[in-house]
Length: 232
Image (cartoon, rainbow, N blue to C red; front, side, top):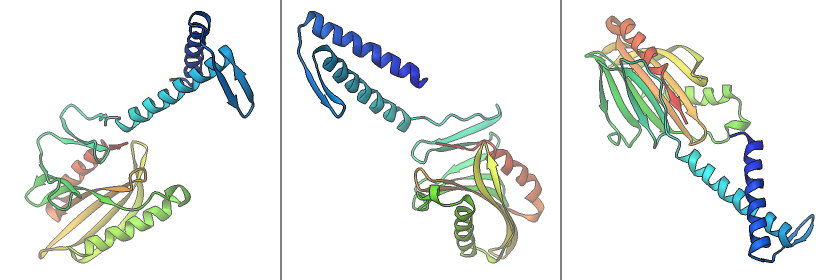
């Protein structure tokens, strides 16, 4: 709502309440403020206005905290939303999504199975980024890049990042990394897209891993999936 409309409504309601209280109910009141002391109907008006203003702000805060995730996806997509982690995304409805919440210390959201040798893993992870307002996006991405490389090296042998770049989805900035390595004796390629959410000290990871033979087909699905991403 327009701020001027909000103030006008609160002003009108306060004026009406003060008129009823002091015209018909014969109430009395005194209010002392830094700018002076007020009595009678003026004091009633000020008191009612500030009570309404406080109640309105409390309701707006509750409304913002309970805002639901609203996704826009193609008609042939299924949707996944998490109010707890404050994000959502869509994926083609012919693919199988394996929900893994809580399986790996609650950081794994699930796995979108593309084929026997390619899949998109969706994760959340706690990272302290609340000071991001005073830190450049480049520095945040540098930290995320380092964390991602360390985590990947724990699962892959000869892990190499070929390319990394800033990448935005629906106006939300993230970091895209292209890599390759050996997983359980098999040569694979990987695309890792990470989006930070400084409001709740969380990062979201979309990790596409595939063998060379299935890489291009799965890559298209990966980008279709992350194009639907949204967060609160």
